[in-house]
Length: 254
Image (cartoon, rainbow, N blue to C red; front, side, top):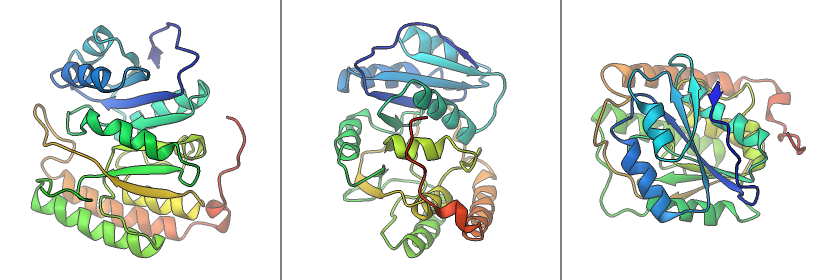
């Protein structure tokens, strides 16, 4: 991992982690918008083996940049950011996508909620409390609905948007997300179940999301079919794990 070496602000408690693969067209406006909405945070862009100028435009926009040697997948890129945040002892992490779908105007709401003592992971839902429903393909919407229902039944609490990558974490959740249990490709409903079984507290709040403006979605083509198959398998395996897996993450500084 190649990471730009420059001093981080010691007083800052929050870092925004953004995995990016070939997002040079979306990143500049996203990073500018984040800075306008919330300035006292650090931003880390993980360039997941991009073949375009993703790393260059992120650096030019003032973000920290971690460059992976090849495309390792969405989950692996995110976990790179989580491990960095854990190592640098950030108190809170906000994860969001680079494609412009996650509205920076909702970051503060996530931070306000994660700052409370009774929650470890705050998930931003595009469906909760929104009058205009988010537009997605039939296959994707079906997957979101089915896996949301399964996660709701298993965890005993409503899960309206299990595929949301717009989240805020505290250090307990961060240690869990940095562990080997975190999926390397599509961390979605299976992670919600893992969090619940590990004793971590989850909450959904409404956020604003938009449709992708530029580039190719990681759920394009036949990938949604693979996603549905993989998620069923992953949730099944999660439920079969040893009891030691479900014990709460040990509370020690990592």
